[in-house]
Image (tube, rainbow, N blue to C red; front, side, top):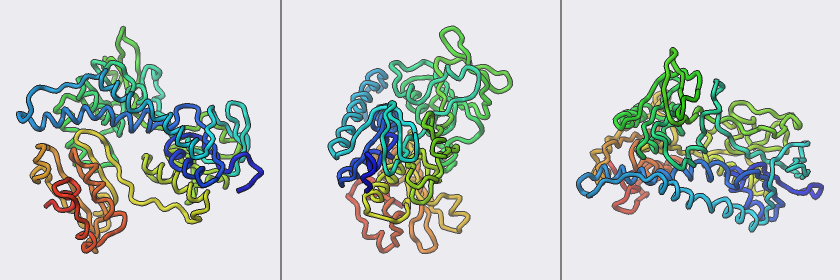
Length: 443
């Protein structure tokens, strides 16, 4: 690469869209810098996916005990402070581990906030640094409702660091964060109310399965208020008041604003290089280039049409590693990306949806897994799946609701990614008795 710049590639942000590709890129001899003003690893590592799943382990243990019933003796309850301490023990070492991974590979980590000065220069804590190529990997940040008292609400990071669980928790929103955190808080003993913008929950997932999860949460005491039309938050002594609907009021101990995420471009000075961000992020082409050819965007900040998921960010980061190291000149081609909502039970999916199958005339096959022997091992009360096959009999999509859903979808993923036919699928023989085997051979 050019010797006219301090670095060959400079990443703004150190989440999965950056570090997963930056470290191996630096190891090839490319001169790499990564700019981060906060913790290395970004949202997912420090205050998102990893932290959430650490808290969820206690939830799954209580669910398993509940399903097994009288096979176990004693009544399990979640100790919130100890669960939070476990989360911190898992998460706290990761930023340093990732920094070490970057520096040992040869990358330079620059600490501070980055601002564009021109297409090849960024200011980091006031010091200019130049690069032939720049990758914007700043991700997204929590959206805040534009209503009176919005400063009284908390975001997902606050929830994942709660030292004590509030007695009554009110969540505004109907997406991943809302349902997952409601599941955790409810299982840990909180009284939870979810206020929806409209009628639909988890709109990107198969709604009949979503309704099974919602019904289970309602049975456990979670309250859903559809079309809440939240208008204001206000203090009320040691508590808070939520004004919604037609001058209705709800008193609560803690408010979580889970109304979505927006592009993280504050004080980035995109205007200095002629770039703007829309609601979905910064527009890019099939090579992840922005309108300025040497400036790229990857991960949640890139408006690619792909779901805002960690595996997508990682895949894009590794693609840019291959592009910058000269290993490929091809356009980015994203494979089938699985997604999951970590409620209890989980809902996981990959590939073609039921709606798409109906449009294309593909075959949808449903299974009631609660009666399949493997799912009876832990007495799962909610377990269903569907598989979608094209006119050549190839598996092109799958969705499952169960405690095992993510593992089941992972087991089916190779067939969808590589478009295996029935003869090829017959050669996939898993270990027995395991879920991987059951995913292919259940009725």
